[in-house]
Length: 298
Image (cartoon, rainbow, N blue to C red; front, side, top):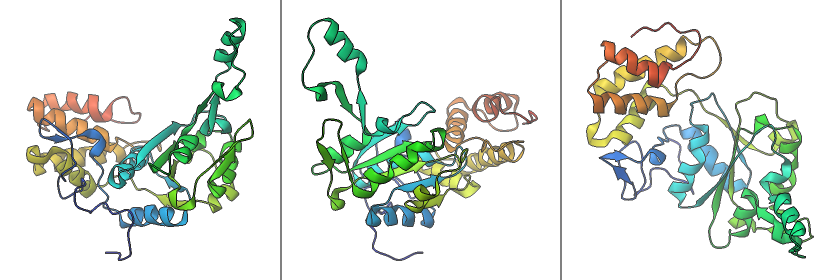
């Protein structure tokens, strides 16, 4: 086990870990809440989060779909008891969208109604970084920038200034800035569909997640299902998921941990066990779905 001073410690009392439920775990029908299921069994990942926190650098997370990239940030925020701000990047995302959003339609409507506000800031809404910077003195945040590789290369480069200096200037000249000790943790995910600029990579802490293995899946199941956990069933469904993933002909990553939990929960609540005709249908709708290159075998 790696030994160092941790600011982020998923094994601290009161949090949800592979060992069970802490005092802060919300439950439904004896199950841990879906957004509180994340097993930090990779010491490299925990260390990477702590390095990002101590250096003030963004954490860039690589990994195949279903490896837990997007759910990392909200779970780190939950354990730290910080707020979460999220922006899912698309091909249409502009660099400014992470800082602010200008409501041109509202301004046009006000102008046509002869009700135009002379204060231009009235027509700007806070983006995720503005929210995190502005509120940092009272509430620290984790900012998730999801799937940055879907954007134009200008977007990652545009982040170098705000994330490096922890400040940026608003269109009307005011500065938004945050002290280094109050800076948010910025988690950026990528599916590696497009090469990211080298200057951007040099300014990130980088970690790569592996597809979930059998032990990891079973640990997540134990955390999520609690008293309903059936180790034999969890192992069978994990083997099935890994078999589906191994037969894939592309790099889509196979079924995710969330899909694994769906299959387990459905199996438990419906009384459906692997090896039956009912299981074949259940696996089709929860694990195999419409993935290409698979033979529908139970």
